[in-house]
Amino acid sequence: MSDSSSRKIAVVTGASSGIGAVYADRLAARGYDLVLVARRADRLAALASKLSVAHGRKVDVLGADLTNEADLVKVEQLLATNPDIRVLINNAGLARLANFTDAPYEDTQAQIALNIVALTRLTHAVLPAFKKRNEGTIVNVASVLGIHAWSASSVYSGTKGFVVNFTRGLQSELAQTGVRIQLLLPASTATEIWDNSGIPLSALNEDSVMTTENLVDAALAGLDQGEAVTWPSVADGGLWDTYDAARAALFAATQTGRPAPRYKLG
Ligand code: NAP
Image 1 (cartoon, rainbow, N blue to C red):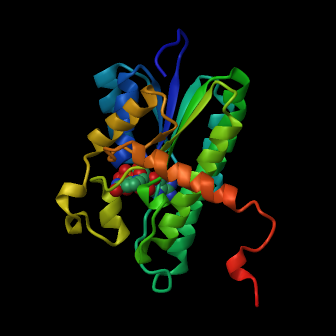
Image 2 (image 1 turned 180 degrees about the vertical axis):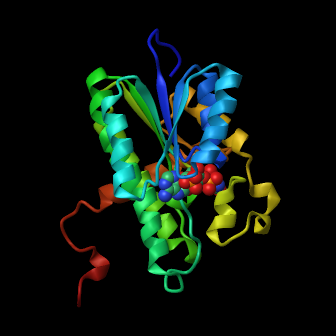
């Protein structure tokens, strides 16, 4: 992600606040022109003028509701047709943290539409050009809740679990190419997502919450170090290796073709 003589564009979804806004700043500082995507076009415009002054980059805004078919198609078309796009940060996301049976189904649908469907479609739109050029970087923002579920996070965790497995599978598919896809698993980060989720940020243990700047800088450090999977808040990196090895061993143990002895009757 560091050098090229031609123009390089990074597309950041969910750039109007939180993690996405910091990605926009950091990528502009690294020499990328930007396309900022989110619904709140006024916020995108303010960020765009700030970043273009600060970093001297061209920053375009694309107001889009990624759960709206026509808007999603607009962003897909941009990703599929602009050859200068080198980076896609699949960051836009929504959390509605409430028990599944108590929450209106619209909340479930909105999380699936944004966290799963939009992320998948944007990835599908950009990959052919990346593969053809044998170059390009996608960052899929999952969550530590992609491997863990509370009673109030069943749908959110389910959507982020999709991002985890989708990204891991794609990493295998793309392993022999020059295209990179990083799986990012943030823990609690100080953004608007909490107050919008039903659990206010103020209810969290302050010590467990990371700043957006620290989160994005750690994520980019992981990317620079060639990591496929980045856990910004986990000090013991060996924990992931142990977890992933246990997962692989469990999967291998499923390949027997017969019921385990404990399920045999009599
Ligand atoms: P945030 O400040 O609420 O940002 C979410 C972004 O997504 C905003 O820019 C929002 O912009 C955009 N967005 C929401 N709905 C959209 C829609 N329908 N169409 C287009 N854009 C939409 O929260 P954040 O914490 O930075 O979230 C960024 C990512 O990090 C998400 O994928 C989230 O799941 C993940 N994450 C966050 C945490 C955390 O604790 N903060 C932890 C783990 C993972 P508009 O409202 O302007 O559309």
